[in-house]
Image 1 (cartoon, one colour):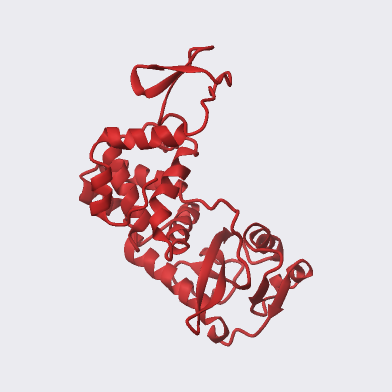
Image 2: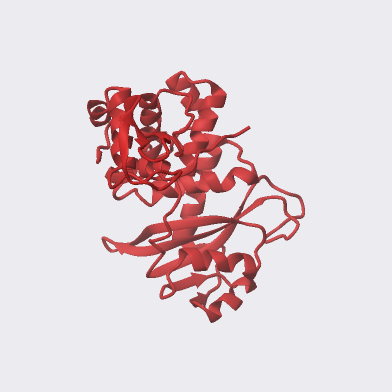
Length: 294
């Protein structure tokens, strides 16, 4: 498993396409072979050493097939380096920057960026614990007459939760999750609690009425926000996300917003332990279905 964080370490381990193929080959079949067509467990090598062929039905499968690497239009070594950069660079890279830096067609860069974002999902195993703050925010330009939690606003609405932990005597941010929502109702907010927050967590929210029905299921303390002063850590994270979105990507549609949220959260939650980020992302890409965008 590769756990480097410098480009020097990366290029020392991955010198060729074969190095990358060997890495995904061992990851895909690190246990036992199982044919996707007939579930037979026996195989024999064929074509190249990166393929396996079922001895029963004859299905021929490569190390990258049926994964997000399937049909990738750039050499896998170049794809690996782009993945490495996106997994560890604090601000990531836009599709346009990928295109310019790695000499890749703009459409190919955009598709590759999207595939990598699809791999930046959360396993759902590590829910927010301890002291957790939850709030919502909206992404978009100013709308005349649409203040606060306007139900008719066209902005993209997001619910955000983060752990507030004490580190070296100061309160700071732990892990976080965010999710696009259609509106600010309890029915839209509760699935976020169920999926992302531990049932034993001590949760703080503002006085928004949408949280009141959820308090029947979770330990929620509702306090006055005072313009965000009582949710300083949460507001700092919101500003970080909006600044990153505006500075790197400029504009993101509502339909694609969750993918950018996932990218931001993937790196944020690994800020203290970045060494496993690249390997985790490769694992996620390998266990995800192929993606084709028309």
